[in-house]
Length: 262
Ligand code: G
Ligand code: G
Ligand code: MN
Ligand code: NA
Image (cartoon, rainbow, N blue to C red; front, side, top):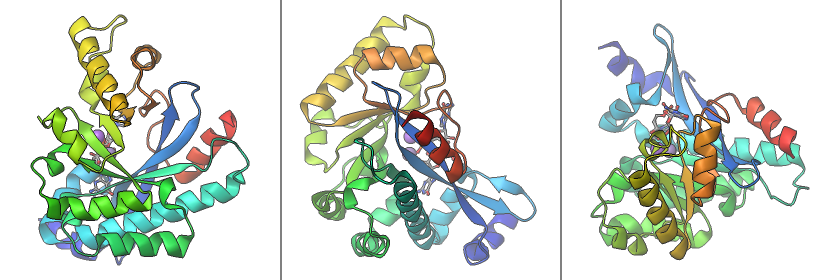
């Protein structure tokens, strides 16, 4: 239908844009970075979320140039935030999280494209985090993991997105070049009441303790209330993201939020 025919040329027409959702340190509430979330401003249908076009982009192969565009825009944005901040605060530069689709993982240009973008923009590799879903890495062989390993060796963080939904073997985590677990939103949703369901508490507690013993950072998604944030902080989660802090928005918004708490 209309989306299928319009998508291949949407990138050259400049119809994509990126919103940023802050990542907040649960201990002190400071903004530490943001996740880049792509949107398509369709001339007839208005703003479309990634769920409407990412599967199509994967199917048609557009995801590779689109993903490269998102990465470059986001890293440029991170550089701009860093300049605005002057880099004077002890917390270091705002970090940027970018989602990778499984098709980008198997594309041979991933490592070189990332290196080129970081060099062109002068952004340190450790300011970048690439998010890969748990399901994309289930049963991953060495060929699939190799580019991620190289990026991790350079200092780029790799995050396991939607963690806890993919039935992955927890022992398998040791094999993956991952430094961050992003706990799926469903765990946060079960913390709606305070105190939350005791079994869910135990599960999150277990994941956090395993993650920390493997030197992984835990980020929680979908935080919508202060009670959830408090509960997740008590459980030892490190970083949070969700509507309680801010909806995804334009880059200026992130800069304002970061300045307020600096
Ligand atoms: O917040 P939102 O509805 O926009 O995000 C929905 C999903 O789309 C998320 O799971 C997110 O991982 C994915 N997504 C957002 N931006 C990108 C992107 O640039 N590339 C890929 N592959 N996925 C994205
Ligand atoms: O990569 P990922 O699928 O995790 O992308 C985040 C998705 O979650 C986006 O669709 C974003 O709009 C959505 N999201 C972000 N914060 C919240 C929240 O607090 N509650 C809910 N229900 N969804 C959120
Ligand atoms: Mn994500
Ligand atoms: Na997610």
